[in-house]
Amino acid sequence: MRTPHGYLTYCTNIHAGESWNDHFAALRQNIPGIKKTISKDKPFGIGLRLSNQASLQLQGNELQIFKDWLKQENCFVFTMNGFPYGGFHNTRVKDQVHAPDWTTPDRVAYTIRLFDILTALLPEGMEGGISTSPLSYKYWHQADQQQAVFEKTTEHMLQVIAHLAMIREKTGKLLHLDVEPEPDGLLESGPGFFDWYEQYLLPTGKKYLERRSGYSAAQAEQVIREHLQLCYDVCHFAVGYEDHAAVIRQLRDKKIKVGKIQISAALKAVMPNPAEREPVAKAFRQFNESTYLHQVVARLADGSLVRYPDLPEALADAGHASVKEWRSHFHVPLFVQDYGVLKSTQDDIRDVLAIQCQQPFTGHLEVETYTWEVLPDALKLPLSESIIREMEWVIGYLNEAD
Image (cartoon, rainbow, N blue to C red; front, side, top):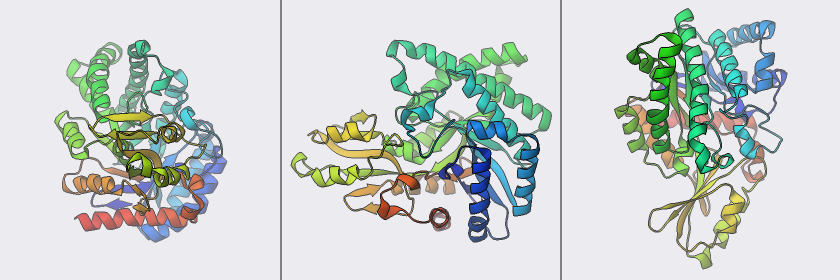
């Protein structure tokens, strides 16, 4: 739905299913009721997630049927999630959420296919974006391989950028690939993203587009800045203890655009003395499930950070005497801040949305809590009810922050 602070939606990666039939069935089941509550008679935007399998199936007549359904329901698609390529529910995902990564032609082909679908769905006069993985998963690559990996993944992303420039020339539609830093991604933080953007993307991209498309250096840089943007996942930046105001200020200073804010919350806890930590460790164990990665970043007394690739590794080191706080990459409901000894990073969402209200830095806002199936039983609620509560919480805060 359109708000004074951008188009607000939720990401449909919350719904299980990998085939287009499964995706479409979930949309038909959930969207009309959510729209009726959230946007009533106004158009409702959808943040669409398509697996690779579904993207291959949503072609031709199936695509036309979907377009007709969107028109009938007074809905539209303006943003998509192209991060998870394969199975995302009811299977062990863990680090395979990054596979195939940006070193592979499969990731390129999938992403271009998603953009072709988005071109067909995007209403005239709107820009569209697709979020994607942060190049690769860092533990798959040795330190001495990383330069080659950065070069290869960047060149593959530039193939997509060239395709988006061609779409804009043919249709006038502005589409952007929104890179989503994540803990333990090859790009996992604001500084890491900025370094890659300035050291690899811009210099390599200008040469690539000059050679391939005949652009001048200035034209090539403008194309890159328009078509490669940042997906600002609040949970991910909060897990890394990043200063949101500082990161957003750097984005402005460096003239890097933000394709969308993914509105999401992580878990955190102040860590007492080691002898008193068992209640905190016990509380975190409730969230130690086998589907997704739940990276933990610990803050030490001197302000330095220790990174654990998943909750089991952090729990095994729960007695670390210098640790003062844990933050875990587990997307929890936006509308709950207090989990007893655990808290959520809801305040980080408030900080980012307050900046968006005062000095807008994107036009797309997407709620992204995809973990409802794996939450502890006490937190599970009917799915549509949960989505509505999350969107109403965001709308309420946006109104409050005005």
